[in-house]
Image (cartoon, rainbow, N blue to C red):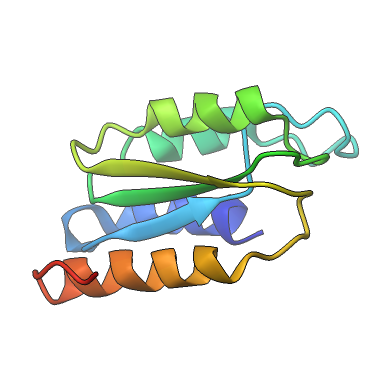
Length: 115
C-alpha cells in the first residue's frame, strides 16, 4: 500500500522530493475489489514525479499483473528511473531488494554512489 498512498504524496511534494522507491503496484489489478480501482489517480500522480525513482517488481505477483507494473513504471517522467525485479509472489521478500532500496536512497540523499 506504500505506492498506492505514497505516489500522491510524492506528486504533491514536487521539487522537494529527492528520490522515491515504489513498487509491487501497477495499473492493472484484476483481483482488487470494486472501489479499490485507483488507476487514473495513480497514473496522474506518477506523471508528476520527476525525482529519481527506483521501482520494484515481484516477477510472479498475483495481485498486480506484471504488464500493469511495467505500465506504471513507464508513466514516471523522471530522467533517473530504475526498475528492479525479483522472483516470487506479491508478499515474498528478497533481502537483496532491501539492500537495493537502501543503496538507491542513500546515494541520492548523499549525492554519492553507494555500492
